[in-house]
Length: 92
Image (cartoon, rainbow, N blue to C red; front, top):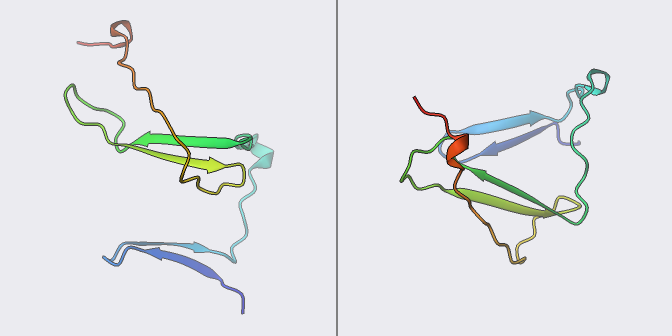
């Protein structure tokens, strides 16, 4: 009577699922270790796209988690955004 499938759906017809009974794929023999577990807090920051044109609005999402992977909702955060250096930009 244990669950065998986890399903996530948005109510608009889009969904994803994970078979909980399938055997895991072991990558340890291929040198894949993953990253080290974070100590106290771990910040994941990403944008909705990888490339932006000058003047476009960039939407940034951030997730702050503790060492157990639980989201931290009430920590003060500061995000510093810097413009890329002109020498790092290649043009045609």
